[in-house]
Image (cartoon, rainbow, N blue to C red; front, side, top):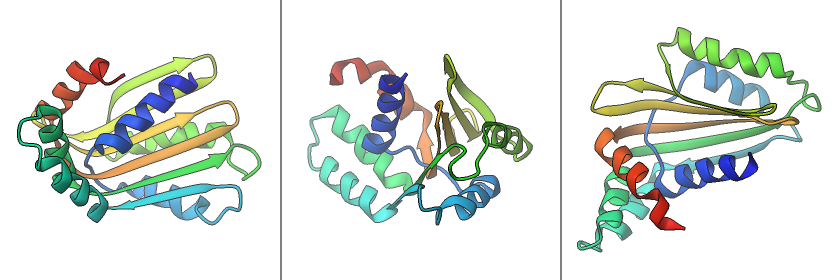
Length: 168
C-alpha cells in the first residue's frame, strides 16, 4: 500500500493536478495545521509556473509539453498529514470527510483499499476538465489530505495514465 500511496503522491507532486479549495478541506487544515505532530506542505502556484516554464522549453518532448500545460493551471497545492489518535483525530472523523465533500458536490473518482489503508480521490468538474481535486489517504496510524487548486484538462490526465508505465 505504501508503494501505491507513494506513486499517487509522486504523480501529484511531479505533475501537479490543478484544482480548488473546499470548505471541508480548509476546516480540516485549519484545525490540524498547528498540531505539533502534523506535517503541512503548501506549494505556491509560482512553483508550478516555474516548472511549466522549464518544461515548455523542450518543444519536442510530449511529456514535457503535458507537464507544461498542467503546471500552467495550478494555483496551489496543500498537503496535511495528521497522526491518528495522537492528534485527537479519530478514523471515523477522517472518514466523514468524504461525506462532507459529497455534500459539496464532489464525486469519487477513485477508491482504493488495502487492508485498513484507504485512498479516495474526490473531484468536481465537467467531462472535459477536472476542478477541485481532494485526495484522502488513511493508513493505520496516519491520515493525509491533499488539495490541489486550479484546472486540469482530461486529455492531459489520459496522457499521464497511458504513459506513466514508461517513467520507471
